[in-house]
Length: 184
Image (cartoon, rainbow, N blue to C red; front, side):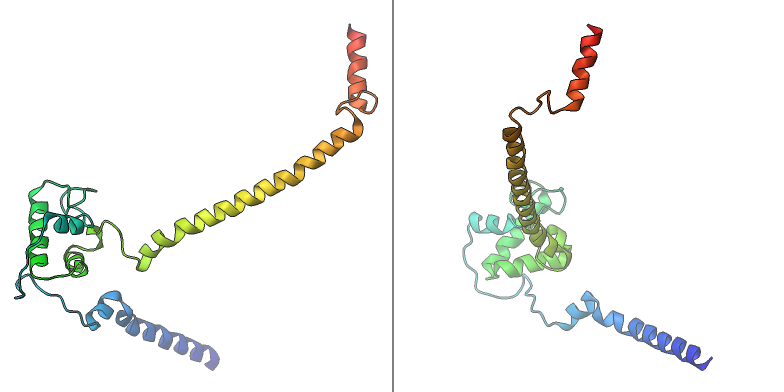
């Protein structure tokens, strides 16, 4: 009886420990612990002239917040105009492309990125296609090899018997010919 009670107490202690430590492993808690510098658009930095090509190079990597599946550089909505203007201001203040993309991801989530970052479940987007290609090539190679080894065996059988269906060696063919002679 005491062993059962001790087992249940141990199980409850482990469960309680997991419940208490689980929030400490969540991504939001870990992200809160990592120090990050997120400059704001009002950070005073020397301005520089920015071309439309520089703005569009970054806007191409973002999706429109209003429309579905339309890159920011080609969308004509007012929201996209505002975002492109914000990108221009960030570039004039000296922000890097990575800082600008991080700003939009922090505000609107990963869904604004045209290409998902290789973290968490998004790693599968980068890993699975090459795995499928390698597996497909392997299966194709094995299938072709099996066909090649099976084909010479059939040809040898044809060469040994002379004709594949000679009436002297095939009892079924002999019977069929006899039945046909009787009916005709």
